[in-house]
Image (cartoon, rainbow, N blue to C red):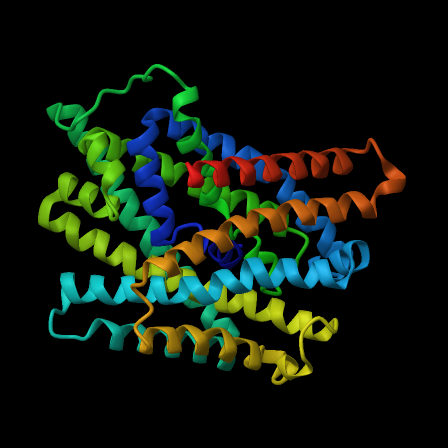
Length: 383
């Protein structure tokens, strides 16, 4: 159970999620905290849809049978694979610079980034069980650090009255709607648990537990940030988590958030290699990728080497800090939402003889929710 929850939370608790969370609070205030709860509700149909896909032999097989090989393969590649290739350099370089600036100033950040990538890739290929245990440790570090900072921030602000804001709803929910919509991005990646071969009867329950736990921690961290940092500072910052941690605990907070960010980045990289690597192997077994990706099939070796190799090359070529890479990451994240909508459409097509059933209606809700979320987020990005 612990490992399944840790795998489901691996990408959810990444540094990128903390940026979305901090900027969301800065833009929408306490309305964003409300949107976290709404986002969790939106993801419940996803859990059911993934469970149905698992019973049908896996998401890839179900989507191939209902939507066709081209749509199935393109959706998986343009969302999860593209996100992994573009996000890994960002996550790893973030971990490297945090290590350099917070703990060991003499250690080259990109050397640490490459070493971390090599270790995690090798661990996933050589010993998957060990990689899962490491995942549980990394997630525990992130959650522990955020809880310490959150509880300290909430209690100290209530005692001293420090911080920038009071807990009150600002007028005009419509003006905050765009910022609130970004909360749906916080829980993207829970499905990596289903892709990482952890397919057991309790998987749906573990996925729900993971998102509920993440929502609780996010809410506490959002409140701590809200009480201790002026909203305009959170809104404009590219590292809102660092501002909040320093405001809450000073130099000690900087150390704690440093551990959180490094562990969170490693957690995200580990689970992406684990889940997307397995997905690519399955795509190859279904004839949707070249057979070369079936090499080392039991360990997903070819897929993991591919997923680790391209980001390593990007970092060597100096693309890790490129603004356009962040644009590609955001684009792939939006396509992941589209993939969720297509997955629900696949379930609807598979259950076309049982229209009106609970699963059918939940999948219909999933198509509508994630299609609408995609449209809103694209509109907000363009605006």
